[in-house]
Amino acid sequence: MIKALMRIVRWTGPYKKRLILGCVCSFFMTWATAMPVMLAAWLLARVAEDARGIQELDPSWVWWSLLALIACIGLRFILTYGKNRLQESIGYEVALEDRIKIGNVLKRVPLGYFDEVKTGDILVTATTELGILELQGMKMVDAVINGYVNLAAVVAFLFILEPMAGFAALAGTVVSCLALTAMNRVSKRLAPRAHAETEQLAGDIVEYVRGLGTAKSYGHGGAAMRPLLATIRRLKEARIAIEFGFTPRNLIHLVAFKLASVGVVASAVWGYANGGIELWMLLALCAFSFTVFSGVERVNDSAHMLGDLDDIMNRIDAIENAPYIDSDGRDVPLTEHGIELRGVSFSYGRESGTKVLSDVSCNIPEKTTCAIVGPSGSGKTTIANLMMRFWDVDEGSILVGEHDVRELTCDSLLRNFSAVFQNVYLFNDTIENNIRFGRPGATHEEVVEAARRARVDEFVRELPDGYETLVGEAGGALSGGQKQRISIARALLKDAPIVILDEATASIDPENESLIQGAFSELTRGKTVVVIAHRLATIESADQILVVEGGRIVQRGTHEELLGQEGTYRRFVEIRGRVEGWRIGEEAAANMMARSGTRSDAGSINSMPTGRQPA
Image 1 (tube, rainbow, N blue to C red):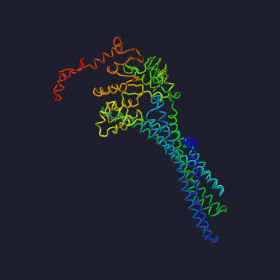
Image 2: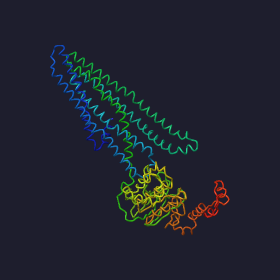
Image 3: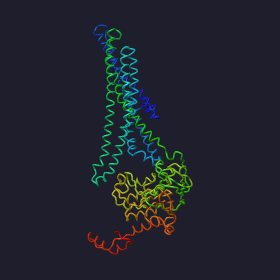
Image 4: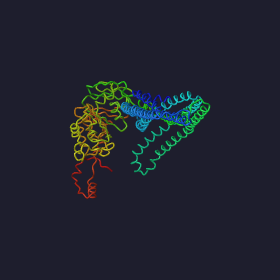
C-alpha cells in the first residue's frame, strides 16, 4: 500500500509540493475539528465541579470558550479552503498532461504497435482508468497520509493521558494495518483481471456497434451479442471476486478499531476511578473514543483503491513508455524531394517470418509521377507506408531527399508528405475545419480556395450551413465522393512536395471520379507523386510504372514500354480493358428503359466503349 501511495505522489511531479502542503492543511484541520470537543469537555467538567461545590465556575470562561469555538470553526474553514485549493485540481492537471503525452506517444509509435495493443485497451486507459486516477488519486493520498499521521498523534496523546488507552489504540491499529495489507494484496491480485475485462468490454462494444449492420443484414444480431455478453459476465465475476476478497478483511479492520474504541473508554473509566485522570479528560476520551479512529476507518476504501490505482498506473506507463519509431531522429529540413528504395525487405512482425517485400529497389526523381500496380496483397500499399515511415524496414533503406528516413523525426519527415487514401477519415467537425486540418493556421479564404480547386465548393454551396456544416462521425453525413474531395482539399491546403495517392478512386462512382481526377491534377502539379491504382486512366501517363508481384518489383518502365513486354502489366491492361470496356447490349438497354418508363436512346448507349459483354 505504501509503495502505491508513494507512486501516486511521484505521479504528481511538479505539483508534489502543493500535495504535501495540502496534507499539512488537512492535518491541522483535523485538530481544529477536535479542539471544540476538548473545550466542551473541559467546560462541562468545570460546570460539574461548580455543581458539586469543588470549584466555582468563572462566567468569563463561558465567553472565552465561545470565542475559542468560533476561532476553531474559522480556522477549520480556512484550512479546508486551503487544502481544497492546493490539492483538488492536481489530479485534473496531471491527467491532462498524461492524456497529451499519450497522444504524442501514439503518433510516434510504429503502426505495428496497434496490432499488439487493442484499441479498446488504449481507449479505456486514456479515458475511464485515467479518469479514476485523477478523481481518486489525491483523495487516497490525503486519506491515508492524514489518517495515519493523525492516528500517530492521537496514540501519542493517549499514552500521555492514560497509557492503557494508548495501548488499546495501538493494538487496534496493528490489527487494522495487517487487515489493510491483506486487502491491498487481494487488490493487486484481482484488479488486473477486472481492468483487462473492462478494456476487453470497450473493444467488444466498439466491434459490436461497427458490425451491427452486417450482423442484422444476415439476421444474426443475437449471435453478434454473444462475445459482448460473455465479456460482461466475466467482468461481473471479476468484480464480485474482488468484493468477496475484501469483505472479511474489511470486517477485521473495522472491528479492530471498534474494539479499540471500547478499550479506550474502559481505560479512561479505570484511570478516572483510580484518580489517574481528571473528569474533563474522562469526558474528552469518551467523546473521542468512537470518532478518533473514523479517519483511519475510511482507509479501507483507500486500501483496495490503491491496488486499483497501482494497476492503472502500470497501464499508463506501458503506453507512455512504448518505444518511439523515431527516437533517434532529428528535425531535418529537406531541400530535395526524390525518393529512393535500396534493397528493402519488410515483414509485419519479424517473428512471423513471412516477408511482404523482398529486396525492393527503385528511384523516383523529384517532381515525377510513379505508379505502383500489382495484384492485391502484393505489397503496393506497404511500399507507400514505408516511405512515410509508418513502419521501419527490416533490411535495406529508404531515402527521401537523400536522407535515410530513419535519420528524421516523424514530424520532420511527414511535413513533406500529403496522402489521399481510399478510405477517408473525417473528424466530427465542420467541413471547413476538416479541410483546415491540412494546415491549422490557414485563413478562411485559403480554405475556400483549396476547396474550390478540389471541387468541394460545388456541393458545399448547396448546403444550408455551407462550410460550417457538420460532417458527422467519420464523415457519415457525406457521400464517399464528397469525403474524397474534402480529403484532396486538405492535401491541397497542406501543399506538401510529395503526394501519395493510394487507391483514391477505387470505390468512387464515374461522375465523382471525373471531378476527383480534375482535383488530382490540381494536387499533383509540380510534385513528386506516388500513385497506387488499378484504373488505367490514373496510371498510363505516369513517368514510370512499377509492377509489384509477390513482394518484388517484376517490371518497371512507362506504359508504352511495358505494353511491349510480355508479363504481368500487359495481362493487367488486358483485364482492365475488358472490365472497363464492357457495354450494355441494345436489346437489354431497351428492356431496362421500358421497365423504367423511359425511352431508349440507343445512340447514347452505343457510344460507350465497346468490348466484351457480360454474360
